[in-house]
Length: 270
Ligand SMILES: [Zn+2]
Ligand SMILES: [Zn+2]
Image (cartoon, rainbow, N blue to C red; front, side, top):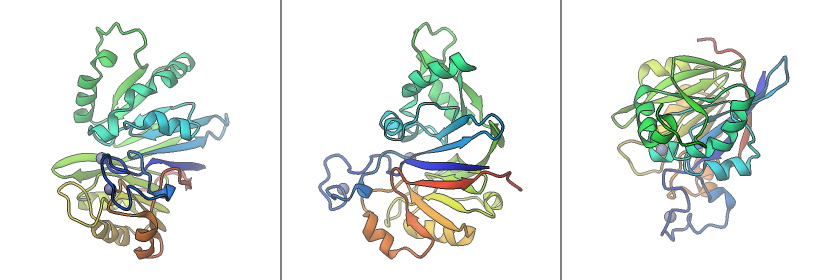
């Protein structure tokens, strides 16, 4: 089965251009240098019924604009990597899509680790509290993220990674993996990343950061994992699109907003 992955956003937490900055990348006229907050969309068509399915990883503050740009009219599930603002603050914009989902079959499942769910429940108390009487709250349901989760025939494997001191979730689906906000990949997680066509991994900038990989670290992982193609995301304004891509080896490139990749979603053999 084949799916299509689309980068909804490839920017770091502040987005690019970064507010108040007049650097060369923030003032660039190249559309590839405009990066919304990080998120990906995976769409596929279910073999038997031919129904279109869509899963989003993270709903950041740009989710509404990203959904409009990419013609997203349904969401079957959301996976959350962790609870930082740039990954969760668009949750409320699921509301209109959740009303449709709920009429069709039920609330949209949101898969999140317990620590992430706790933050979501606190911020969106009016959505999740059983006492909530807010009539147009999102029809969504938090579900504890398991090692493997199946969504309409596609298996999502949790790939634990470290973001500074914090363990967060990366995901593998078919022959692709999405690892954002990574500073360390634990040894045990490399075993989940064999045989990839596409590895998507975050690479913030050249200068070290306590909770994000630099280009150099991400390059080392890319070589070790050996996917056919590696894409960098969660990119800060230090990295101009064209200029950085010219320095990267074959098979490794910066992703950009709106980039779509066909993904083989066959079963994961690990
Ligand atoms: Zn982030
Ligand atoms: Zn800048």
